[in-house]
Amino acid sequence: MIDIPDGLIATQSKYNGAAGRAFLAALPGRAAEFLERWGLRRDGEAFHGVCALVLPVVRVTDDRRAALKLQPVDEETAGEPVALRVWGEAGAGAVRLLDHDAATGTMLLERLDGHRSLGGMADERGAARILAELLAGLTSVPAPAGRGLRGLGELTERMLAAVPGAVAQLADAAEGRLLADCAAAMREVAGEPGDRLLHWDLHYGNVLADGAGRWVAIDPKPLVGDPGFELWPALVNRFDPVAVRWRFDLLTDALGLDRERARAWTLGRLLQTELWDVADGARRLDPDRAEIALRLLGRS
Image (cartoon, rainbow, N blue to C red; front, top):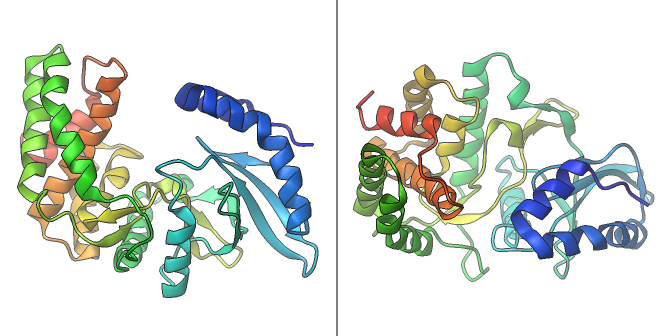
């Protein structure tokens, strides 16, 4: 038996509703099934994120330390094993996939140190450099064709179609104009959405250390697109207004990106996040995100 963390219960109920509650109800049985099927034994306390439960395990046949990841299969998570395999073959710096069950999305991954992430590194610039180097490696890999991964082109079409309604819903006219400016910037580059394999959510907490001290990217929500769409999490996570510009410059240099294109895609990523909030009933922009937009646009 496993104890399901209260935090995972809360996020699954909030974001996935009935489907999330069904996933939680099935979780103890699913964990027991894969512990037996893959010959694993528990080896420590569980970890969890917004959508997944991760159990530290040991593979009985060879005493290999690993991690059993259980999560729902949805638009964001369906491509994770595909991406991990591709990045693994390229040695791009992502967590290694050891086994996978396509029907349930259950994965067996290499074991990392869940207590040591870049989010806890005191050296802010050092953490940003490590994250930038990981992003450079991940985005150097072309997305595999015909594997059903989400595409940035389709996302941008849906986002741009939603902008007029979102602008009308915002209570502050200046914030509405700022959101429209983000959309206008993204519209300039939307015709060339890109073909790289993107992580989509590489913030400081999604970089963990392995036993040898190597920093490893975890928990991708794979997307096919332009690497400029990858920079946003590194700007908003551990937010510091005075760090926006130097972080952006560091990231674009490390990835070899044209800064104007990267700025447009970063504003598009902000647009995506704000559109979600507005769809949930928000009538004001998040102030930290708005500050990032203003600084990227040279207005602050």
